[in-house]
Length: 177
Image (cartoon, rainbow, N blue to C red; front, side):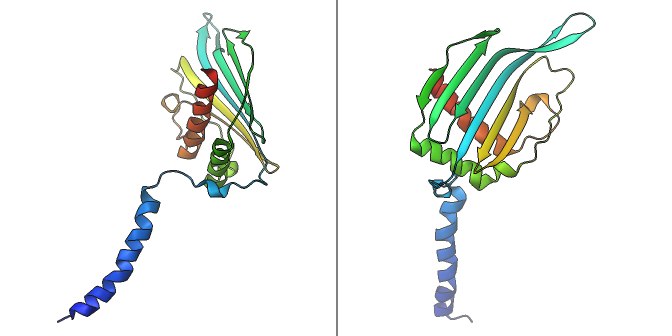
């Protein structure tokens, strides 16, 4: 028979492991400690609302709306909007340091800069869809990725891309209000 003292001593490492691992598993945010002040980042995020226009024999894809967000290393923002071919006045703002560090950490920790610049094929029957592009320069290394909405491609869009997209969309929503 096992003595109770051995069971109590054996359960201590299990309890400590649970206390350490549960917060790490349930936490869904990237720690901002990955970003440091020496990191240099520039982001250009473009979002196109595209529509396929048929001219009988030929077809053309045109942008109904294009949004471009530039984020510089110092937090300066520039937002441009083109609707129906007409460019709206640019909106300039400043991104607070915590949000900038959150984006830097997200890009560094997830290995976003290492994602290959592959192409995602668009389905033939897609007539209206959103296509996004992000160009990131982190400490002199550059990566540019183009991707459509998930429902118009047969390819799998990695969750890393959609995480970065949702963070940048949040900034676009804040600045365009």
